[in-house]
Image 1: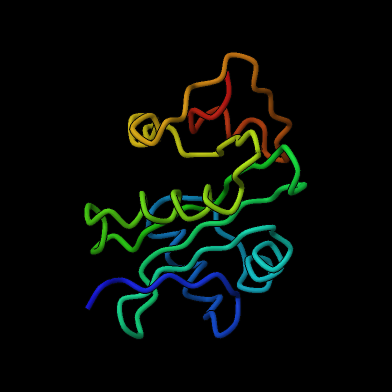
Image 2: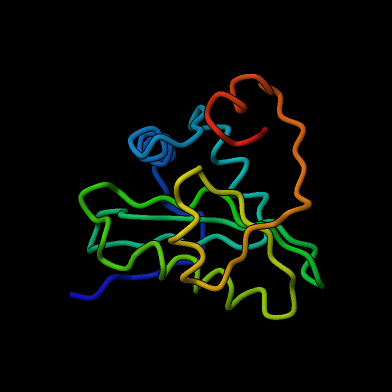
Length: 140
């Protein structure tokens, strides 16, 4: 059975979303916080293997010319099967006229380069936990 792609937040177990983000070492919050973030996003993509949620991602956008991708994550046992690539491609299909920024974990640059992304030289960030993000390699 091929993977199923859904573009809705309906019937999502937000505890599972938080747990997957934690498993892959990404920022994770309460289930309610993730639900709010995804529901307020321009584009959401969830990938299923039958009844099992195996990956997801989202983008915020003005829908005209700017967008940013966040929270692309794949359940560890499903990594290496093209699901991350599928998620990003499906998000990009829904943002055809937009410049797209990407927020990713350090060490994932090669994965995103293969999908056409380039490292920015002018990106800046103002994080709530600036020192913690510096220690993790997100900022200088």
